Length: 369
Ligand SMILES: [Zn+2]
Ligand SMILES: [Zn+2]
Ligand SMILES: [Zn+2]
Ligand SMILES: [Zn+2]
Image (cartoon, rainbow, N blue to C red):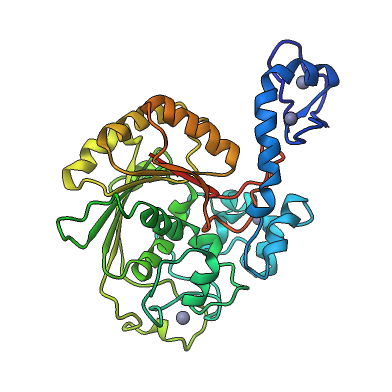
């Protein structure tokens, strides 16, 4: 961790081991840096203090592995690697990018679309839902019950992506224009990163939105050149590991809806004209965006504001969401249409080595314009 006063005046004298005694979230190399930074930090400190009080709520999940995947990782008694190893998922298929060492392991030789969960049928949603959704899902517990999977299943680690989209659509239901009676839902998905290696999980949207054809246009600088323009149709669910499970039959699914994905390399404000030729989005979503951290978002946000399309952003912690919201308000001169709120479908495993002593989760907080 870096001294919070680094680069402002005098040089740091060593590692940042001295935490701010009030919020205990930022750290300093020395007492003198702590004192000199106070006028800058004061407002932030009060906010962070409040956020740390709320963090119990962030660490709360219904899963049997909750303690292991949250508090124990935050306290470094456990790592994402050991969590995955215990379940024989370390460096395996879709799970490869779920730990810090996994990315270097997979390198560039990654198959386009992985078809397997690497989980048994009691842990994996591998076929059509037994019954259609009778009401909106509001938490992981309801989703797992509906899909008849055990609360021991780590599937939520990957299902955070489609479930966050589902939740963003529900939150904007009143603003989504579907007057044309079309079955299509078009989503512009900005800044994909590791989800590019986990694209098959978006097929779960077939179960979640059985009456719609979902089209997702992924746009971002992380998309490799050679995948620009690639189109992927997903018309089946990811398979489980059970040899005799009916998900292995070609008629394993009765639903005839399709999820279509397309990849576009570059920034949204550079590529949107090409995308608009085919389709105007119903929703724009930017997961784990880091709006305040990357200046390239400014142009994109101005564009989204002009388009007047509902846009949902997520971030890893409340402070990042707060800073992002401040950027959004100053660019659009409007209040958020969707205030900052905890995402019930955030990834149930803590991020390791965060910049602040604050719990962080993928897709943790949602907000929108
Ligand atoms: Zn310092
Ligand atoms: Zn503080
Ligand atoms: Zn690892
Ligand atoms: Zn199966």
